[in-house]
Length: 362
Image 1 (cartoon, rainbow, N blue to C red):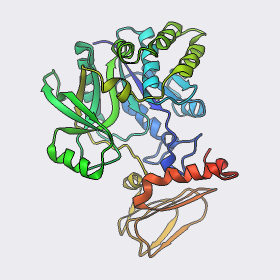
Image 2: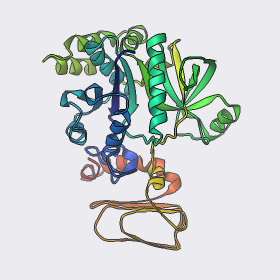
Image 3: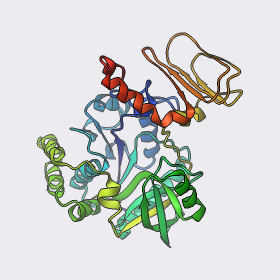
Image 4: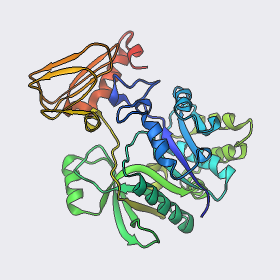
């Protein structure tokens, strides 16, 4: 099999995890779902697949130094700082160009920086099986997760006919990519069967992805060719800056995957959690009576179904309330209803509009 490479996408701001998450220290750099930063856990997960020299990270200018410190085994040049955020299509095109320059036959697995996958062996087997299919079939693969409930915060993948390939993983043709649905539509999708959560993970030959860019996003392809030509040389960073100056802000789903006739979904038979908001974090913190989850010093009386995180000195007292999220840092406190956890980023936006508020979010 061709050489396998991996890329961790680490450009997110993590605004739903304010006040703990800040622009310079976002979700993927926080130890909110275990003892180490989330990106370190993802790097360990993918160490089963690739050595450190074949692991890339694409991140922001603000986060690059912290990520290099969190991942000391990864070569510094493999941590690529985007000049600006342009969504996932330019990010994936960038790393495909760099990997293709190093190894034209390489297969590339691209994963987010902030997901939790405890079933490491099943994950590794799935990714290896997907890589074998990508190499043999010149297909663009995405990993679908069996939905456990009607989630409105994820996109969905509708699977078409199954296709038989060697290995334990089940594969299907991609019938359709579905936008984040309403509650009623999500329930109908799951009731109808044959759909998966879109986990934002992809496997493909680097050359095949570049060919897809030439076909579906031709205006951006010359910039990727320039990056490929400059990879490993002094002109790499300048080529990346020039590419991002002209890059469209578009997801890989919109730019390529929805249009491709060679898209295949691998059925991910492993537990997966994108840890998308404070409500998700409760499963990883200390469990208290009444359905409460706590991290740090807190005293609870007659509290139900609360998530309490204390990252500062002192104690949080919680009395006679239910369904609340309370998170305290040294300079800020969040109090919100669990049902509004997805809206925490609105607080970040509001603070940016207030005099001096940026210091509490950057």
